Amino acid sequence: MNGNNLKDSDSKTILLTGVTGFLGSNLLDALLAENYTIIGLKRSASDVWRIKEFLNNSKLKLVDIDKIKLDNIFAQEHIDLLIHSAWGGVKADDRNSLIVQLENFDFAIRLYNLAIKAGVNKIISLGSQSEYGHYEGRVDENYPCKPFDAYGTVKLFSGRLLQTLAEQSNTKWFWVRLFSLFGPKEDSKWLLPFAINKMIKNEDIDLTKCEQKYDYLFVKDFCKGIIMLLNSEKSGVYNLSSNNSIQLKEILLMIKENLNSKSKLNFGALDYRKNQVMHMEGDSSIFFKTFNFTLEFDLKNALIKTISFYKNCFNKS
Image 1 (spheres, rainbow, N blue to C red):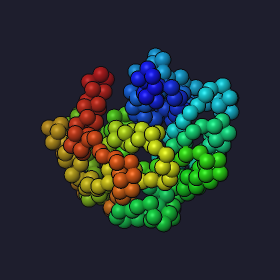
Image 2 (image 1 turned 60 degrees about the vertical axis):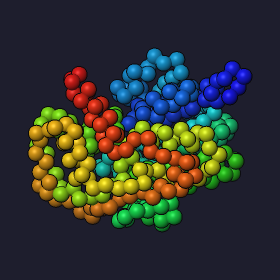
Image 3 (image 1 turned 30 degrees about the horizontal axis):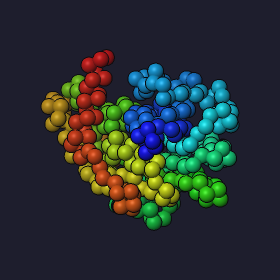
């Protein structure tokens, strides 16, 4: 605290990439609530529906990365912290496109180098469980990384590049490997929002047996974890997940019960895809212990908040 009892975040500016995406928009909400000043990177064609409520916030400045050179942003703005959440080609069709994924790598290289050159104090960048490759069960940070697609491979190399560049310059850095996330503002084509919207309309859904056990982290708890890193000096690679897995079928039945939906969930109507992973769980014990991190929302309450968001969207449409 300073003499005026202002929080340290009052005087700090964060460069946030991917500000219009699912994770970036939720981070924006959480960071503005902490009174950070945000420079949000987007493309001129980006749909801003996720951040519409913040467009007139004096603490937010949006920059179109396809109109202004990246080096000019660092030259014109004083940036204390960098959170890199942008990543193209996350859907199945693009995950093995080396062209798409190398564009992400090229952007990350330029971003990290410019940030370090400009004296940014701390860099937080988002990795993925895909860096571990094929696995069944619970994996921690010591599990060998053997990615099987371009997405996981480029994520892995981006993280190692960040570590090298940051350690050469004594910049604090964090590479956060994420597992399954859900919550408000997720793309409606992903499973949970898709199922919620179908159940709101009482439409039947054809599904696999949904015996997979996944480690679902509520996006608001993800944001809480990232904010804790902004106040930490303990650089490194960290898994960030709910630290527990649950069968997908159980989650869908919880949604149906909450909505009192008449939808019929046709479990087993679809086959599992080839090489389906049946147990995907992140061991985030190091993150929880290092940062004294606890989940603010249990799964039931997180689903209630998520369902409420999509119900409001449905009622407005």
